[in-house]
Image 1: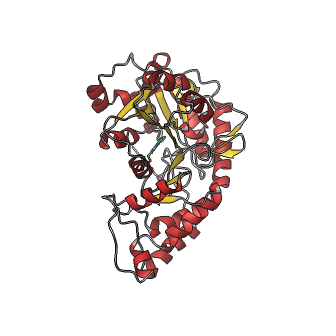
Image 2: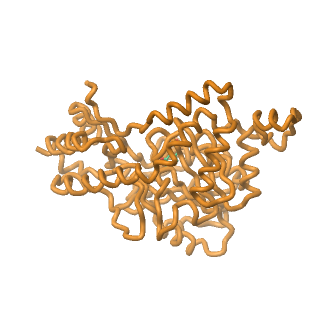
Image 3: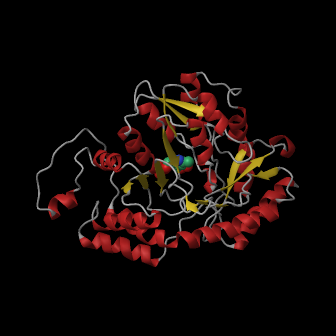
Length: 383
Ligand SMILES: Cc1ncc(COP(=O)(O)O)c(C=O)c1O
C-alpha cells in the first residue's frame, strides 16, 4: 500500500519561482504559445549556442516534425535501438516508413555501431541513437559507419539535457537533436520537447509543421496586426504553451544544479549497491563525458534472486519504493514483433536487457534517507 513516505521513481523539482511564473502566465490573459515560449526558446538557444530552437509539446512531437521535414516516408528505413521509448518507432511507422531495430551494448544499453553497419541498406534514411540514461552515445562511431551517405543522424537526447561528451554539450554533434521535458526528465515543462537542427530551412519547416502548417502563432498574428494566414502544407498541432514554458524558463537555469545532485546520488548508489549480488548497474565509466543521470538503471539477475521482475517490483512497492522500466525492448512489443516477425533471438542483448532492467528512484530532491530506504529495501529482498 502506498503511504506518504512512498519514494517514487521520480519527482519534479518545482519551486516558488516556477509557480509564480505559471501564475503570471495565467493572470496575463495569454496562456497559449506566446512571450514565455519565445523566452524559453531564446534561453535554449543560448544554452546550446545555436541560432534557433523549436519547442513543442513533447519529445515525440519534436521527432515527428523532424522526421516529416526530412521527408521520411514509404520505402524509407530508420535504424532505432530496441531499448528506447516506443513512441519514437511509432513516428516512423505513422509516416509510412519502416523502423529497423538495432541491438545495444549489454553493459550500457546504447546502440552498437556494428549494428548500424549490419542494418544499413540503400533505403536507410535516418538513424536515431539514444543517449540512454544520460550517458553519451559515441556519435562519431556512427558517423564513421555512415561515411558520406546522405543519412540523417537525429540524436535522441530525451535523457541527456546537460550531458557533455569531450567537453561538448550533447545534441550539438550531428544534424539534429530531440529533447523531452516530461516530468521525470532532467528539466520539465509538464509535458514538452525541443528540437535543434543544423539545417535552418528544415527547422523553419518543422516550426511551420508544428503549427498546423500555418507557421504563425496566434500571438504573432495579433502582434503583427496581421490577421491573414497562409497554409504552407498540412501540419500538426504540437505547439508548446506559455504555461508550460513558464516552468521551463526557471528549470533550465537549474540544470547544472540538478545534474550535480543526480550525480551525487548515482555515485552513492554505485558504492552502496556494490555488495548486492543480484544487481548490476549499467556501465558509466567514460572519463570524457559528464553523465546527466536522468535515470539509474540496474540489471537484475532474475535467476539469482529467484523472483520475476514483476515480483521484485511488487516486493519493492511493499517497502514503499517505486521503480520504473526503461525499457521493454521495442522489437518484442506486440505490434512490432508481429508486424516484422521479430523473435527473442534477433537482438539478444536488447532482449535480455528488456526483461531485466529496472530504474531506481533518482531525482534532485531525493534525500539521502530516502536513498537509504531504497538501498535497504533491495538488501532486504536479497536476504
Ligand atoms: C529515450 C526517449 N526518447 C523519447 C521519448 C519521448 O519523449 P516524450 O515523452 O516527451 O514524447 C522518451 C520519453 O520517455 C524517451 O525516454
